Amino acid sequence: MQISELARRAGVTTKAVRYYESLGLLTPGRLANGYRDYNEHDVRLTQEIRALGSLGIPVERTRPFLECLTAGHRHADDCPASLAGYRDAIDELTHRIEGLTARRAVLVAHLQQAAHRDSRVSPANEGEDLMTDYTSVPADLPVPEDDGAATHLPGTKMPHLELQGTGGTPVRLDALGAGRTVIYIYPLTGRPGVDLPDGWDSIPGARGCTPEACGFRDHYQDLLAADADGVFGLSSQEPDYQREVVERLHLPFQMLSDPARNLAQELSLPTFETSGLTLYKRLTLIIRDGVVEQVFYPIFPPNEHADQVLTWLRDHPL
Image (cartoon, rainbow, N blue to C red; front, side, top):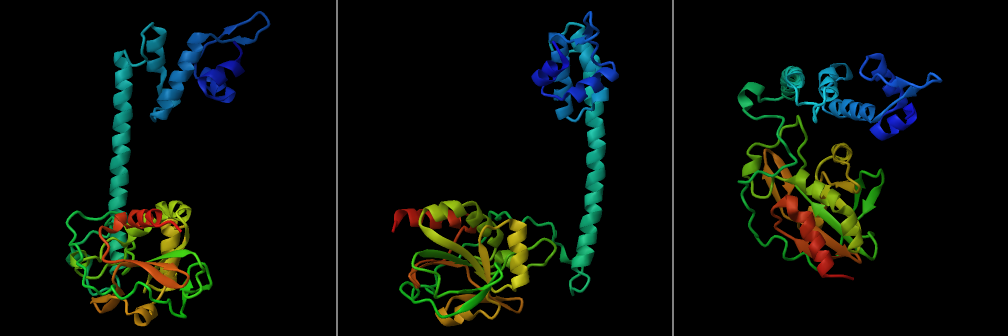
């Protein structure tokens, strides 16, 4: 067979085949006219080179495996030399992992120093890993209780209030349209390298803003299909912070910024205080025709909340 057919069947380029030949890994026959003539064994060898490459074994180190096949063995790793090739590749990978781990430790140390440079708490005293995974929810979080702080909201008209959105223009909350709009309200989104308030995980309902946002991101198209005209996230964080969250989490919807907590004042929304901050308690409003149609409060667990909203929309079609 010709080189183009060999390349097609083995899933490589003709340039790669020529390179294998230059290393002596393939030795095709020659036709009377001088053209290369490849056979099924060459296809098998080329496929093996490609498979080993996907495991991270360089072409130059595949010779023991190919010689094993050429010797008549059924598998390329049936020979002791092939097993040695595996060990060499594993050893090299182990060294690379150790090097990357050491580099990561240095980067974490630099991150801790930079994040605490102007802080009253030093990295040595903080005792907390800044590489905390904010995308997960710890299993032992306290469950928030219903304190009745949202019972007055259903049927309430949205106020004439404009909030800055990450889309670049203000969003008027009493002019969201005639359909349904989901606004999930949350305390604050954690960001790698930025301290959370002291005792954050011990405050019922505080932890979990990033998983909640990711849930609405992942269910966004499902929510629209269930007759939601739009989705917004809302917190008291500044617009620049909100824009960073949208970019980092790849959110397909806008985040609204309410640093003065004007919506809390207009609708008497529940808030809480910690570390000198006044933050929104987590709740979600479904707005229809400018009126609060449904309220979710309290919300737990936050990483499953988007699915809860989706279920409600599907159970209450327009």
